[in-house]
Image (cartoon, rainbow, N blue to C red; front, side, top):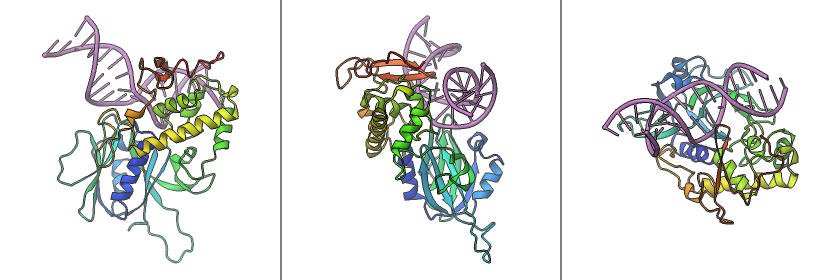
Length: 304
DNA sequence: CGGGAAGCCTGGGCGC
DNA sequence: TGCGCCCAGGCTTCCC
């Protein structure tokens, strides 16, 4: 389930394998994979053909590849102003994969989009079983806090691995909310990159319950839970990410192994590694929350 | 306007 | 063995 560490593994793989390579042809095999590209699949392919990938960047769970000026619409040499350019944006959703594959390798069953390169080397494939993810091309726009971002990313908060991440500002944003702590952690406009797995792990490490009302959270507790999220995601990244099956893989198709290090997520009825109490599973937002009932007691005033 | 929940998808696992 | 149901879950959209 790609959250920040898994997306970062993919970003690094793309930085290693597709930078400075010129796109020769793009094939869209499934229109749903480009549904966020409003002008459609043909326009998507046309905008990318002939362009060279010059950057691989990420914010939270969003990933994008910066494109050079390309042949079409190149900057006017007589003008001092250079257009900020554009990028192909990827969101992996639940099951999206970016794979670097030799051109003769058989297609994956759920191959959605294929990029072939002018150098004839390994191609880039977007494979996505559940099609929650997708690719789209966007102009880069100035972000409120500086820098250039693809338009759909402009409203996403910085993530804890961003060098400019402001911990105290993120704590303040959480405490401004009127909701449960886990809901706030999952809100990508408050802090980005955290999904269901790392939210549960961070809450366990900080000994806080998922339904803790944000308005009763102290600044210290806020800093602790965000520091825990940052730590657990850094550890997961070092392990190559978390995966429970073959759905989440790096660009070479290999799985990470952080699932062996999870303390509560998916550990219902197993002993808490701190106190031995069986880990509890609660229904939460049509999914699950895992916690230790002893280390993370439910607050008297829990947020519904 | 902010918060909450439904809806989008497919395949694996499980019970009957 | 096969059918149908449930579950996984990030994000968008809609509703209150």
